[in-house]
Length: 465
Image (cartoon, rainbow, N blue to C red; front, side, top):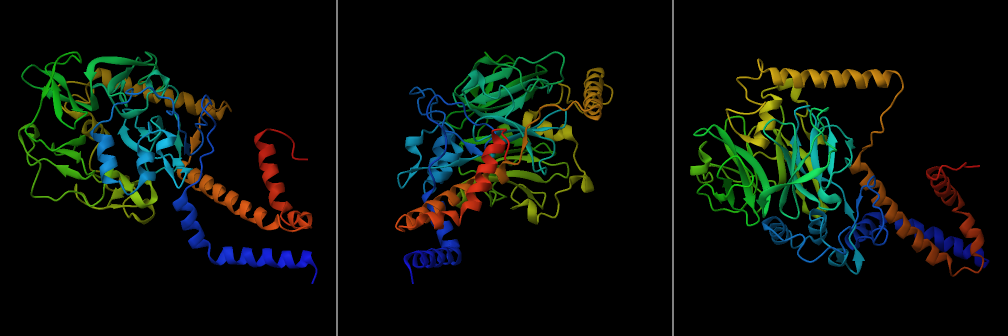
């Protein structure tokens, strides 16, 4: 038996061993993690990729002060360093290493809200804004232009003003911003951010209607997880302590019956005992949710969507309940029996919007009693219909907009598998490097190399032949 035949036999046996032990090899590769393919400092991030780039390796000390949010993540998931790095966009690559290798971070949503045009906007773990119509759709559009305040401050969460016409966002600098807005649009997703003065040292913002003066006031959660409220409707007014509950809180959202719910420091859903929640403690009649979530939002059938934390997989996945209760378990879409809310529509879009925006009764375009007769609401609805007709007309004439829709879950799987294949290719190269006649063996995998060259050439816009 000549040397060439011997080495080919060894290679085939090795590949056979790899195949039958793929599960163990895959677990090993996943545990070790793989060095991210991001470019060096000063690069322009590939925003269309499913990978989250390390963009804050040179951030100034103290620019992004640590809050209850970061502390809770590090405490609850101390055994899952990859998840910690995935959830906190401002962490440096030097802090995100396992076995000397840089942790690869993949995109997923961490905060979701619904808009008056029916779209859902989400803040992803890269701090940018993404959009889709139905949460059950597979594709996200984004990141949207001008997602981040000052071009580099990642967002924690977004909401709107009480009219639903301006975006409001909270950055990782713990300041609040609002979009300047385009007067020719119902709501401007891609306008410039400007600082909303006075609301400092906060991680969350929503609204509360004050019936005594018929004005709304800002409710915020500060960096320690404490509830505060503004003295009047101006952002520059003093923030004072609000409510009697002392449990640290990450987020708030209401429900259709007027109860207020929270996400606590263990990332569990809980609800207040009474509807007058500012004078109520958290309920002791109901246990906290089984799943740990980083955000939640209602569907039209009154079941919750949740951004469910999966520590073992170092990711967050949108799931939906099958029972209408705050503590009900979240079920993956693939196994969920109640994804189509149109079959049992119980609450209107405005109720979902108000649940994330705050509970109020007298002001804003979302006021239920005035909705059908309100001239402003009718005008906004007509603008939406006109814009939709224009888009349909342009599409029928062949004028397509440059909309970037991506299935980031699938892209993440593709990029993860690609990195594993590269590691396996390196193993093969190491094996054949000992063969004096390695050229013939390398030619045996020429087909794989050719396909890779074809893909690369296509990306560069060159001819394959």
